[in-house]
Image (cartoon, rainbow, N blue to C red; front, side, top):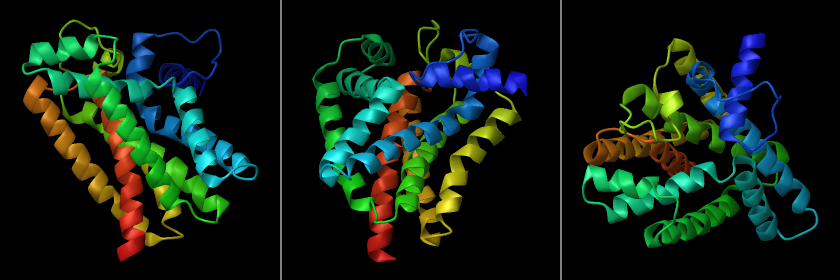
Length: 258
């Protein structure tokens, strides 16, 4: 149990800005195993985002509350995944070879593709979240948590099926990409799917969102494979962000047509 807590706190430290015990560091062995809790981190980020929304909506308009919840999520992760999305936009938008794409993604500066991509990402996420929220606080909580956990499952699953692209150990994801066991796979899927399964007790159709989310994950992974022969940490961050939005859009479509 003590070891599992250490692994969990390693994941919490790596994927968020939440303070952790002082004895937690970037130990490579624990970072390899931390991927089993990546989806669980989605529970935490989703819950924080929901709580900020739920408190704010009692004071401000729903639109302001949604923006504040988005800010809370970004602050919790340190814009970890949004940064990856921006880097992917810049890298694949401006590069035409594997080497050029990787060099651009490694650059800490955000270019035109990244800036435009983030603006459109936030606009679409804001509008999508505003459409899926219900009058039930419990269902809204489950929606927030499931969106974050399922999208993180889609992202981390790329680690289980594809090879790491860089050869210079310069990426954020390198420690978690070196190896994994069945514990990491089971942990990622368990924590990734459980909130959605609970949500399906209210609306069984919610399970269908897995189809578009993992179709999106499939094509993103194939696109990364085509251009850079695998993935990087930025690719995982971009996948999480895109799949989170696909989750919300799928909910809208399901509730409209089913």
